[in-house]
Image (cartoon, rainbow, N blue to C red; front, side, top):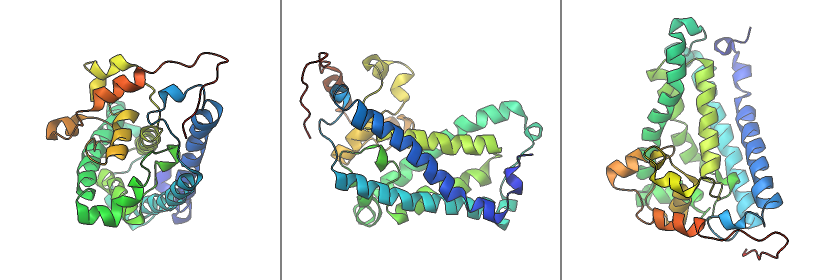
Length: 268
């Protein structure tokens, strides 16, 4: 029976390969679709009307590889060593019930969003920014490959959410792997560089609380504001939501779709 709580230390050491493999597959698929196959047809939805250079892609992939190794090692330290005895990792769903299982995944996102917002703001403090966060911000015009492109010190700090979650709340393997999957999806989506949502979503009572690719792309382009990961709650509460968001949304959605079979120039 599949029981991650009984994985050996060696099996947990495979986590870096698992994390890196998922990152590569997802990023590669999105890169092919948006940056190769539909590069010309969907250019009107490209937030910044240019593309990263091959050097940018190489740097992003290199640092993302290191980050995957660090994330995997942190997961191993938490669950593949004696430290796991201090966590609330469990496998019997009946122990906490189905309701908790269903609630635990969105709750991990809420906790992670708060953790990410404040550690992200801390890393924008000039002395810390130069030491840790500058590497990630070299992707001024990010691609899907930039999702995990962190300096090793930042990767360690970002991975801190793993032991925090495992210590403060009961997490079933479904919850844990659901969380790390959602984290990957939001990271890659936030760095996609393309707008995917309709314009009306930004004024919707629920939609306005969801972080989008435009929000995070503006953060990379302007360096300040929009520090959240999944939601805009903390940015709105702390006054760090950029005031030019709706202007950027109108700009992107105001572009005309290319006419079929008509040459549509690409500004690289």
